Length: 120
Image (cartoon, rainbow, N blue to C red; front, side, top):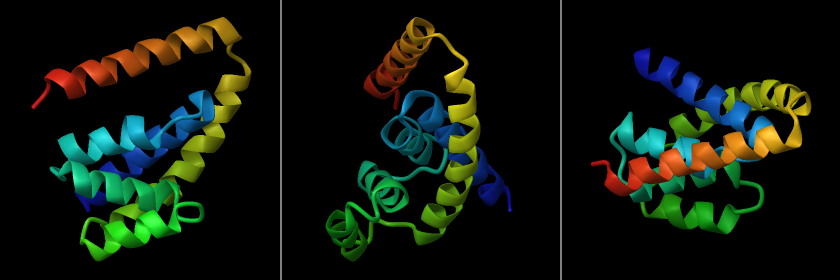
């Protein structure tokens, strides 16, 4: 149950950031799957592709799935939460000045990059 709550939080956060900045999967979901759920980079990327790119990336999804790198349960929970978060993030972004949105996004990307570069 705790795992489902964490997945819902990650999904909503990724959805909010997608609505706010147009991002989510690579910047939120992949690091969360690695650092919170202990997935390998391959597993996290495969699960993220299942969540975000299934309609467009069906062939990539199939390759990751066949290799055993997709957690279908995580994909479904994250996708549902992502939809909700995307709605609220987009509502918020519409009311933020362009320059402020750009600066917030830049800081966020830098922080995540530094964590991934120097973290365990």
